[in-house]
Image (cartoon, rainbow, N blue to C red; front, side, top):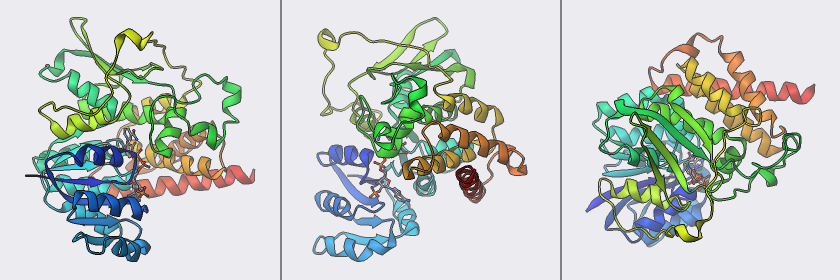
Length: 389
Ligand code: NDP
């Protein structure tokens, strides 16, 4: 029986994965969560997991209590999450949010497991490192971001050298129709709504600011090895076309479906086959129109920053992601305005571009994590100075 693990089981992607695994013929090795003991224990019970790990060490007694009589081992702490990811499995879902997903994902790849990659931050912060690590261990990475899954499916059996453009669709997020001057006053509650997708809080805010799309542009460049100018972002408010690829003969292959992450998760779970999935079907007769527009870079400076990051190369992606996470923390805490998030990321990139490591290709995880740490610290200091000004 196929052995599977889920890192970030208690999150939005983790829950959708659970929904597919509960009816699948698999043996569950490890499930990990950050702080949500109740959901982690409930999933571990339902899936008869070998081990359940909670990242917050203080919650180990609660997890132990919740798993009493189940036969599932309980563990806690960041290192325990990495150890769980290292347990032999055939398929591992990488769905921890943020740079915290990097080390567990790499640990899973080191076992030769197939990594279903939802954690887009991995390729943004350390793309070349992750890809060479996977190649070294003969491990496969399958994309789970719906856009990258769509592109991956459009490219099946195609020659990459015949690709002319990747069309990365974006809903435009919950604040898409707001006038620019109102965006500056957007509150946490405003930014936490999404017109089409039900997702975790952080990625929902990143969708409104388009930082999510900026990460995805960099992720697509790393994953598919195309040049930055081959990637075009297209606003598509209905989120029905999940992304598309144009070939040199002018043909465009697009992936369509309802906005449900179980499409992409199910594809990665069953790859290279297609299995029946419990997703709502598209009804073209009632769909109405599909609309498209070019993104306005004054509204979405994150997209411009992504281009600068790709041009800089080296560890710029690690700085970009860490500064973005720090800016998001400040926005959630109410210490930074919605539009100031991009200003903070820009200021952090400028400050750290003078570091000797900035332009170097990452040589190891420690170097990436050190740059991540420095970028968070720098972003935090800049935000604090702005707060005092
Ligand atoms: P959520 O915030 O819903 O879930 C995040 C998961 O990570 C939870 O299990 C959380 O645990 C766990 N976690 C948080 N911090 C840590 C930590 N420091 N150490 C270990 N575990 C931690 O996020 P999403 O499911 O929305 O997103 C997960 C990843 O997938 C992100 O990288 C996102 O960009 C990507 N993605 C998400 C999509 C979506 O539709 N949601 C679509 C495409 C990509 P707990 O909740 O128990 O605290």
